[in-house]
Image (cartoon, rainbow, N blue to C red; front, side, top):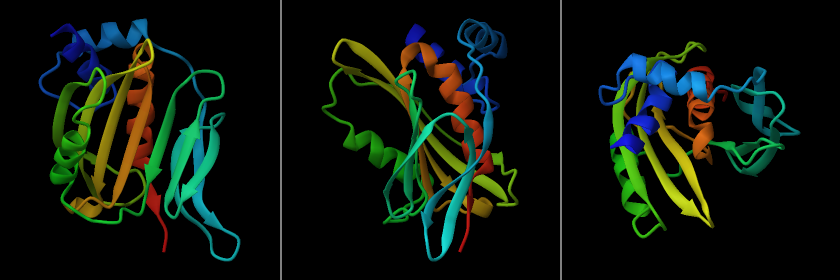
Length: 193
């Protein structure tokens, strides 16, 4: 139960209410887990001929790696944590269906603990309308470490269809910071033609 509250409190401190986590509990977790990062608008999914097709507000110091069409990863060079954005999902299920499919795909993952699955909406800061989101939060074991992950499926302009996937992951103690990175990236995510 304690891990559930900690995992969900990490996202609750970023403005997304999840499964009734009390704000006071979330503030205690945030205060004990804060770390300063500088954020800025970062472009990704770029090509020389057509320019960049997506952007989001992300940590300025994190290294960008292109992963393929519509997909990029930003990695902290100092600490094992990252954000991966897929702005061009091959299939377009509903956000809730995509999150449930992700949960099913994780079956058999070493030390997997599902901490929560929440559907809701948040406000876009990039005129993308209300964003429909479904967020799956979980931990798993990697070697001797417990890794904390939140995968979010995003539907733009109130659409329930998942158009993008945003995943943050890192050390368990970085969950509050990663929740902040996830929220900033989701709210600022913009896709260009």
